Length: 250
Image (cartoon, rainbow, N blue to C red; front, side, top):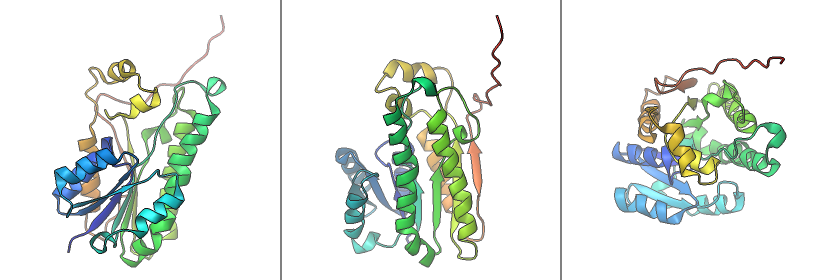
């Protein structure tokens, strides 16, 4: 039986790589995002029989519902939701941060994620499906400038565990996957397009790639249905836990 996955934020990074991985493994893929040209490129590369694009802003619930209502029959029954869409904005400490950037992160990483999940839950329960939420190591390990971004990802982790509890006995699997450094467009978005900052961050670090995470997502999705990965933290070997900060007098 061919299964169907809906991947939010499929126009770049982890989401784009996941679309390739799942389509290559024989899944039907519903790919969502704001950039129509990138979704069209996915369809061109993978085939309209494998990928169906949905163009909308994840924070626009009206546009989301209209797009979902128009799914063709072949893609209508969703077996897996991958809540991948999310972003970090700004690197300044809290007292210097832009509060509008904070609100955008909360709207995208928290509100849109829970709303999409709630929208698809009835079908996922009926099909004994699965949900994979993309959190971050920032949910566990704080760092200067991570403030609201880390808070949103901590929410995603706890929400995932709460879903597991609420869905007990219904056969629905829920996973929080918490990656560390991955070389994607993440830092470009966070720094408003500063390519030098992105290059500096990843230079010589041998970071993970979107493809690495995509293969991990596919592995989780294709485990036997009686197994659940509750949480999975994954980092490149070059990255480890930050040390404590100490402010000294004088």
